[in-house]
Image 1 (cartoon, helix red, strand yellow):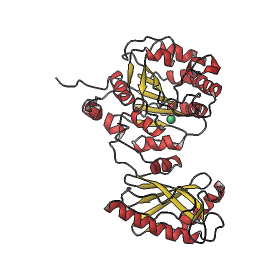
Image 2: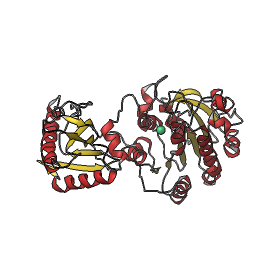
Image 3: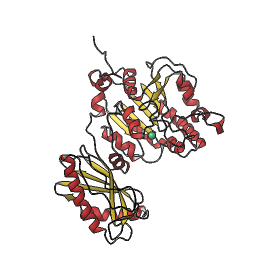
Length: 405
Ligand code: ZN
């Protein structure tokens, strides 16, 4: 794909049109031998999606690259029209977003574990006996109360599940090119914090000071008397979605990680609890305030990861049952797709392309009778990189001008 996709700003036009991107997480599947050789979309009863498919253009999207299985991070980066191979959001940053921390540009985030070490400083349990989440919260709170800054760097901590927590360093000129302190194996001492360039040396120094102080505070803990850090990464500086596309953008997601990714891109991300029904209520209540709506539905992916074909089918049917609520808003462009496939046969994310439905009077030529992988494979939109979805949506919303004279 040429560079124009990275420079759509030069083509965007003002418009009152409204766009909705529904990401049904892990939507795509492959035929399952135990279920009549059907995919989950094929097995689901989806009268509303079928009717919409007959008025929409269909296709298949490659999330990142042929044969490459993406995480949800790269999957969403591509859906937002950014290059998922160039813009990498590191593990620590994703983890921080996943526990609901609000990151600023330049923050350094790392995944942290409580661990057990013996008198010789050797790690005997990398997970501190899997202490409970409540125990972890208590310890993290104790650490945070005693350690707020080290020199000019702010230290932010947040507990995750069991022995896990997240550490964020906020300050000037910090690098993220650091060696993990987690030796990944028991029977070894933790590695020393070490930076591989000048800015990262400063980070390593702060981390070292943090570990000295923190391990002093927890030294009498029977199990959680050590801390291991890994996945140091910097919150990226990027062109924000609203500026890039000239839209007011709202993200509607229940899970913190998706909300967090959207927030990095400059979406507004109000809290919403409950399920898809509550998400759609929020969509309705905010309809006049925004131009672009990203609506994330997680349950399909969870069912696929559990290898639960029938539950994934039910999730798709539930989405179908609520689709009329979205259509009642009369969006100018509505896209329904996934961030990657999660076939229940594989019990995890996969490299298979995502089925995509684009509904718009200007979307192109409808070819299908149902919204399934098979029908999408012969759809008008063909097979295209997910990164190109945004330009198709904007064009269908009549928000892109001509390229060249
Ligand atoms: Zn996903």
